[in-house]
Length: 399
Image 1 (cartoon, rainbow, N blue to C red):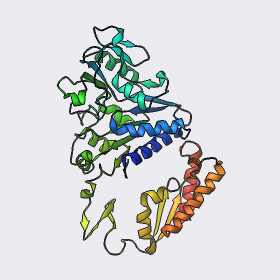
Image 2: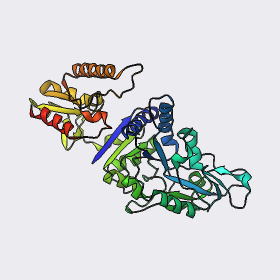
Image 3: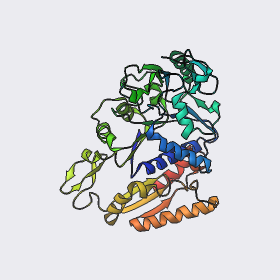
């Protein structure tokens, strides 16, 4: 099980780092369709904007990506010609109908009883069109659509019946759930319709129904990326990571085999309460072993190996710890891959490899550690491991 929490200094930095992870996963699909589940709302919009910018400038290749909406609103009660809220309630969700006349392939519907003059885009599709889906062919965008919310749910369920998402982007709702999902125990829940008739307009934006994927689709996804931004999320984030809430998000955090949780500094504000204090310093625990506390390091005269997937990962993720342990131990950074897929303008593959190696050498010098390189072949075949990778690793560890 892989569960990684990444704290970023600002929402802007969070958007960039999350977008980089998504773009990397799309690249690793290696010619196959990359199926990405997308939620809406203010939190993921920065990540989507950065992903779109990366695609527009050639840094990322999203041309083989199919997009699957987490949910969609139906049944607008606003007067004819006005439409419902300009901004959707989004997949960040509230605390808990129908439409007719879909225009095929456009994500556009007409309100019951109105003429085609009342045509308007489905709100979540419209929101994504503005940030992420600009220029994306309609056949690559999938979501609930139909003459009624019930029909849309049925059609989307049929479309999703044999579909597994490669990655899904989610955000934490104010109550610690996901979008409009509220049952943390129904792991078999599929696509269904949620009645929003009694919900405050702040959340429903004037719509009566929501059609949403179920918890089963999120658990079945190959990877989940969770985003959380803002001081108003600090309490719920601390509760979730401290296992003090039983919600849909806590179920994902507990059960999903590959989940990355991105938080900005404001959302992570209360996380220090999860760690015990030792004197005037905080004790950091990894796998129930104290590795930073007052006094001498807990390890001495040991060989400590830090396996880094790419050049710079060790410094970014564990640089302070490695530097702390280095004076009393033999610390080795072991770089698994060449890192030549990094974007360095106007360079060849060989030049990028040389640049990344020099960066590692400088990093090791600053940290007071040594560095070795494996150059695993898997890096050039979409990160798929084979026997040659295992052999290289075994040979190194036997030295």
